[in-house]
Length: 313
Ligand code: JFZ
Image (cartoon, rainbow, N blue to C red):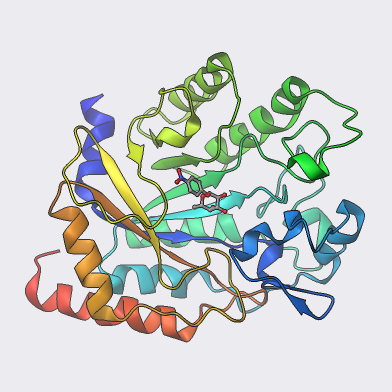
């Protein structure tokens, strides 16, 4: 609808945040580094990490450096209007207080805080939008969630049951307990049925009528199109679309990834996208202690200074 689309067209520039248990190993397991995108470590075929072993990360997860207000201030100073954070990535761990699963930051870690609630409050105070990333099909922890082929044996529950017993309740929590949600960002729909994709659309419409849903909900039922990762578009696209990007290479924090974009590069990529009618969303990956890498902040704030001086946002 026009009401929903209005948010999206005005935002233009958003912060993406990938943050989860994977931020702690940061690409390293038992002294060996697995290069690539660090949030995929659990399913690295060579590392061959058992679910029971991986889940022990939660016992040590205590990111006391997490500062929602500082992150929101960084986004505002960068010139951004919206933040989208991983509520649950493929690893299956809920980064908020989930009442429908004990595999969450409140129940399974010593941290005992709800960072998504803190972020929701800080975004509301600053007047910027908040959205949640939710991996609706892949869940490498959960029985019935989609696993990778080499890691999918002995499932004691069907995908349909996992969907109704975990995805629907968790998305409901996220859309009822955190105030106004601007974006519901789904990912890797795989073989989900259209009925399932539509069920998430209907749920979102009933609980957050103004929220925008991305195309990775699957089956063509989203409100806007997310292009393939990192791809700067050379052309305009019909309808509403976005490019997603990272301040370095990996989405989740990876200790070895120092390929930071400068402020000038970020500006180039932002303007290249917005000039073709798209929105631009660029990722930061906080560490396992909740700290934002200094070089990510540097590039974003340097671009933000230019925007403040020469833009009218
Ligand atoms: C997905 C995730 O698997 C990844 O961990 C990260 O969260 C990223 C933002 O999204 O990866 C994808 C999904 C779709 C494409 C590429 C990577 N694609 O369509 O090109």
